[in-house]
Length: 363
Image (cartoon, rainbow, N blue to C red; front, side, top):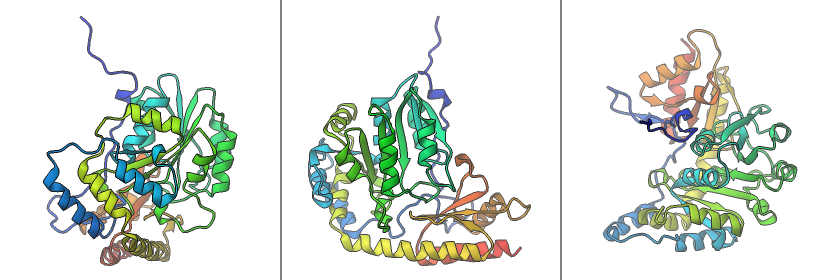
């Protein structure tokens, strides 16, 4: 008799591990591990979620119609080409299912988001990395890594976990250098934090090409990671493919209500962006004063590099911070074993983190 076996690629997956939320024996936790919003959800979103509780015996709108219309009005795009999902992670997986499989390659930068290789392997495709330049996507290296088997190129912009970004001119150069039968996926999960003039989240390229898609999320700026809500914008053909591949009710009614309310709360977004910019730069500067290296991040986290010497390594720092009830994210899984990623929390949380880090470095 035969043996039940999963399809090729599944057993090659190392399951994604989210940032920890608890430390055994520690009651008060400061969690700076998952790039979550420092203020929780927008108050309007909380109100909307509570109101939606009374109708949870009804299936949600399978087409996310009202949310898509609000997104379209906000970003001046076509609602019919927007597809919503259970976080942008679901959409990344659907794109791999739809456009890649055994014998195909999925390309991403060396320190790109771990969900890219996971999504590729789940479809039997082969994930391929291209070297970065100063922890930043290198367009020339990406183009050089393209082969006849390449079907999808993922670019997180800004990138998690490095926090770096490439300007719209470089993204356009990448798209122009790819074959027409290669899908470019611009993962703009942190776009709402960007204030640089040379940045563009991906909408312009989507409008100009038929083989580009942009993905976004409500998990970061809007503080709604717990409800799992994201969206993609692409050509009519790509939207049609995603709608065929996704589950019919893939976004919950509570998520739809929260997302629609959050999009109206410009004051909350402005407050969060201002806070993030202030405390991100403060954190990077204070880390540098301690002799540590930081990339200049454009997201809602700092990437801090530690020396390899005994006593002051990233692992030792992580253990010390945990002893103080502070959880950050170790980066070994991303090939950055000497780094810790620190999400930007509240003012009190960042001061507590820096106080503990200063104590550790003075040991």
